[in-house]
Amino acid sequence: KKGNYEHYMEKEIFEQPESLTTTMRGRLIRGGESKLKSVVLGGLKDHLRTMRRSRRIIFIGCGTSYNAALAARPIIEELSGVPVTMELASDLLDRQGPIYREDTAVFVSQSGETADTLQALEYANSHGALCVGITNTVGSAIARGTHCGVHINAGCEIGVASTKAYTSQIAVMTMLALALGDDSMSSRNRREEIVDGLFDLPNKVKEVLKLDKDMKELAKLLTEEQSLLIFGRGYNYATALEGALKVKEVALMHSEGILAGEMKHGPLALVDETLPIIVIATRDATFSKQQSVIQQLRARKGRLIVICTKGDAEAVCPYGVSRVIEVPRVEDCLQPVINIVPLQLLAYHLTVLRGYNVDQPRNLAKSVTTQ
Ligand code: UD1
Ligand code: F6R
Image (cartoon, rainbow, N blue to C red):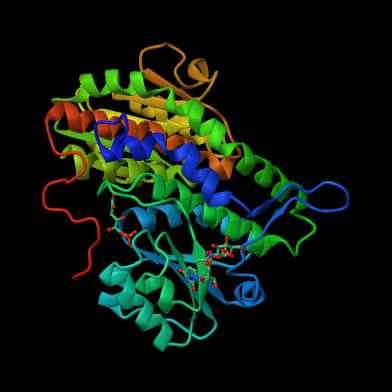
């Protein structure tokens, strides 16, 4: 089943143009004539009104699924106008945090069987919230236990490290944002641009996968490192967290995703000539802030690797000292789907070079069904 690939993780990374295509199949409307470009999510159409009127949307998940929701949060807030809060399932349960009838609770889970997420679902349900599932597994406990939802249709994911499910989850939650916003005239152009961006996304993922060799080269340079920091912000704060999660869980290297806006509040103290730091600085509204983060890291002689938009190498690194990874530009809210790919490839190659088990990382299980 692995075909030409050594490992499932590698296969699933390279499958992403196809898995994204299946995720979106039948759900995007091209427009034309008098029809608008839009989306159809069959499982949600009778519940969108309730969701739009809810007091807040709470995203609940663990690990990679939480990170995917974090990536989609800005566009859901922008297009729906409903405040979005984020909950790691275990933390919500530990706190027994307040949930109300007027809330929409969205449960994100690849397997649909994660114990903490499932228990949080029971908890939210008992408090009267509308419970929505975003799962990859038809018939799973979370798919069955939610009032409605969307299957991400990414296909079976075998590698313990989640890759293609992550990008498909972001695609689905972006479609959810479009569906929630489609009663608004003022955001119509924005929504149509995002629909166009979704249509083109599989091609752009194909393009970014060509960085495989470069990421292998980078992995060679980093093989012996103890630690790797990843700075991101805005849409790509989630990319930083997810990239670091991949590196630690499969390559067994300490890695931390850091919100760049927090740099001066502690992490800057770690910066020296030896610690490798990846900075995500692709084009969006936060670009100039990331440029100044790069300057400040350089002023401390930080060992930087910058992920930027194609053609921006000069703009992010005027003296050519840092390593630069250029990725194709897509609509800002879809950029996390592109930006995670080189980090998935980096984690994969680091793992192989360090001699660890790619598909069955030490101490981990694909589906965490106990607490
Ligand atoms: C559905 C069919 C799909 C068919 C399409 C044709 C299923 C599983 N899907 O897809 O095969 O091609 O119609 O129009 O038969 N749900 C939850 N919780 C979840 C996920 C889903 O309650 O976590 C519910 C949805 O609200 C919906 C049903 O499961 O009632 C199917 O969801 P989904 O597969 O996303 O719906 P469609 O895309 O319409
Ligand atoms: C990381 C990873 C885990 C899962 C987490 C939630 O690569 O796979 O962090 O994302 O255990 O699992 P699901 O999405 O099945 O609820």
